[in-house]
Length: 272
Image 1 (cartoon, rainbow, N blue to C red):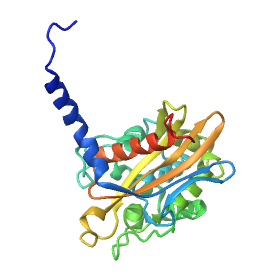
Image 2 (tube, rainbow, N blue to C red):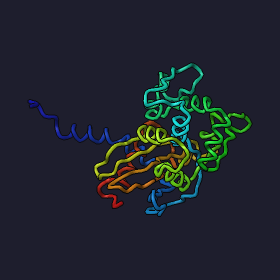
Image 3 (cartoon, helix red, strand yellow):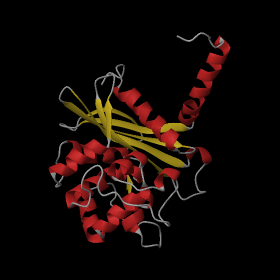
C-alpha cells in the first residue's frame, strides 16, 4: 500500500495530459464514410456518408498482399521470411529500420516489406491477383511517369471506395477468392485485433495516404485514413470500412482511428 497520496489536482492534470493526444488525433479527423455489411448475405446493415468516394488503398492493401504472398508460398508463417532492412528502403518510421517478419510487417505497417513481396511476386502474377480479386479501380500504374506500379500502385494510383472495400472483404471473410486456406488463415491471424468487450472478435487493418498530390489539398483535408476488416460474433460475420479525412497522420492517429471504429461499431453499446 502506498503511504503518500498525490494531490487531486495533480491526478486530474495527469489524466488530462494523457487524454490530450488521443483527443487531438480525433479532433483532426472527420468521417467520410462508415459502411457495414453482413458477410453472408451482403445486406448493408449500416451506411453513413459518401461510401462511393475512392481513396488510395494505402496500407489496407497489406490484406491482399498477404493473401497473395501466402498463396504463392513467398510468405511462410508469422515469422518467415524475416528480411533485413537495407539502406534505400522506405524508412519513414524508425521502427522500419529493422529486420522484419510478416508479424512485424503487419503490426508496424512496414512499406518496404510490402514492396519486397510484390517484387518477389513479379508484375504478371501481381497484376493477375489484383484483377482476379477485382480490387478497387485496379489501376497499377503507380506514380505518374515513373513506371513503378509494382511497388507504388497502392500508395498512389490504386484507389478503392469504402463500398468496394466491403465487397472485397466479403470475399475474404467468406473465402470466395481463389487462394489457399493457408492464405486465409495466416492473413486473419496477422490482422487479429482480438475479442472486444461487446463480444465481437475483430480483424482489421489501418491505412493512410494523401488525398491528392502534396500541396493540392486543404490542410484539414490532406490525408485519407482507413480502418477496414471484419468481425465475428455468435456465428455472424460483419465486414466494415471507415474512411476519414485527416489533417495529419501518425502511429497515434492510426491507433485512434482503429479504436474509434471498434468503439462505434463493436462495443457493447453499438447495437450491431
